[in-house]
Image (cartoon, rainbow, N blue to C red; front, side, top):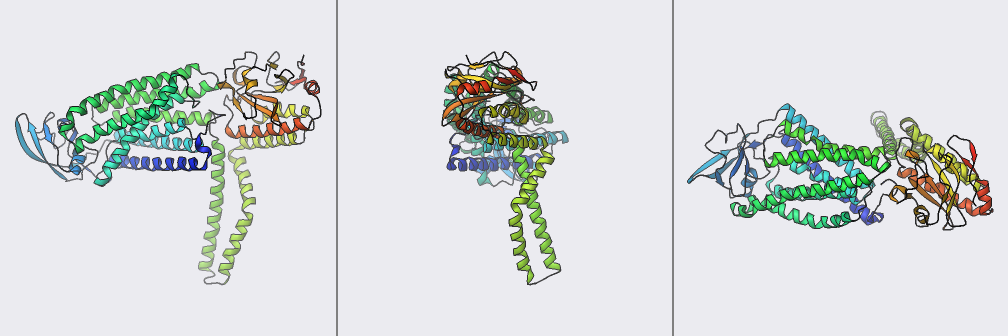
Amino acid sequence: MTIAMPLPASHTKFWRVVNVLGVVALGLFSVLLLFFWVAVTFNVPASGDYGIENVDASGRITTIEHGSAVDKSPIHIGDRIELPSTVHDRLTLVGPLMPGIGERVSLTIQQGNARRKVTLVADATVPGTLAFRLSQLVLQIGFLNWLIVGAALVLLRPSRLTWSFFVLGVGMIWPIAGSYPSFVPTDWVVPILVLSIISCMAALMGFLIFSLRFPSDAVSGWRRRVDAMTPLLFIVYSSLTLGVNLAPIFIGPSAAWWEDPVSTALVCSLPIIAIVAFASFMGNYRSSQGLERERMRWVVVGLSCWAVSITCWAWFFFVSSEYSAARSLSYTGFIVLPLTVAYAVIRHRVIDVRFVVSRAIVYAAIAAVVVIVVVILDWLFSTRFTNSRLQTAAYAGMALLLGLSYNAARQRIERAVDSLFFRQWRRTKEKAEVISALLRHATATSDLYQPLTQGLAEAFSLESAALFEQADDGGYVRVAAWGWPQGSLWHILPNDAIAERANPQTKSVDIEKLPWREPEVPMGSARPIAMFPIFNMKVSVAILLLGAHHNATALDPTEVREIRTFCADAGFVYGRASVSRAERVDAGNAVITAGGGFQAGPRVP
């Protein structure tokens, strides 16, 4: 997930544009739902309530709000009502739209064999308790964080895995928020409701896809078949759920005979999907090892909290619809998942957030300087030199000066920001520049050994690094290493999984994804997690094996690109060197050890 994160069709400009437009569209829709949620929570502007919480498709009243006008009237749970004739009245009575204060609706109530006409008047909604509103606010901020993390993942690393996580956050807003405030136009309600239901079903499929694919975004075996079925499942679930939710609004009691069985079937199938998803995720976790297991550990906690919250949501939705702070607090598990995923992303450097934040600060500083200069010039000419002939020339001269000084100023600000906020990153870049200079000035392959092992390990804070050169048998012989104890692997056979992946089409290999269980290598964080081949004229001449960082995190994309550049430079050195393979091996018989000294290494037989 760190070294070879797939970027499917997004390599093309068209799909990159589609990717961005998709994020923007879903982001705007999510912000709209969040805005409705906040407005309903804090009752801004004030909305009304008839007091009838739930009415099934047959018109039977199933829930009445405690303390409302309806609760004090002769209307009781179990009574049946004839739904209003207009779509607006049905939306405010049994749909998601809240009525305005004082709004009226005329109904016919059937109590046993008796029928009577009543008119309901929407009272002002009773404001929730402080604890309830605070718990709702926590949820809203949590989902906003989910949307931000998901959008960042999709924009920077687009794949089915990241899209499923983003869609899961978008689709969970509607079933928790539920209602729309009274100021929403009636013509908007049904389209928004349809989009909300579709996004909710997409979230269900997103949960399944995320569980199948995390963390490598790859599926195999039975997971591949389930993954291929998700588009069909999405169509079926969306169609049935749309029918169940829209039937009371557009059809009325005549839909009751099929609405209840369909609703029951949908609810009963949810545990099956949850079991399949968790079985897949926990299977991936149990079969993982090393850094992959470390990446998944916290996400297991997040998914567990998510499962508890979704169970509570189902209970309150189907059994007890009364809103309370306890109900809202039981939903807080929803916001744990994005936090754990964000932690896994940043902690294990799936995305190099340092570069993004650094450049954001740089360009914000440049923009601030330009704004200050423009404000000062505007003030100067408006108060001191009004209608001066120098005004236009001064503006043109300042624009020219800013343009000429932009590049130099940007570089200075970048260095200042990196030194102030990203000091360790700045040191790493400086050490990487030293390694690059050593590689460019190398005249013999032996000049590469120290920079590509000890130099790389110290520059990027790696636990281990080892350089293997190709032998006559087609395998690879270790000629230099850092962090590799005595007695470690020194000869990689030609049919080894790593040797077979050293081809011109390969730029880097995530060793954790290979069936490579070599025991004679450093253990723990020093165990090799990445392989970088070195080529000369598309012929493999060496491979570089690198361990994790000192803090047990994997290489981030920026480091991977830097190391690829080093390997490309090393390939030119191998091409220029006029020594034989045997001479190269003799020169590399001094193996660099973790202690910093030199020790005699194995010779090629």
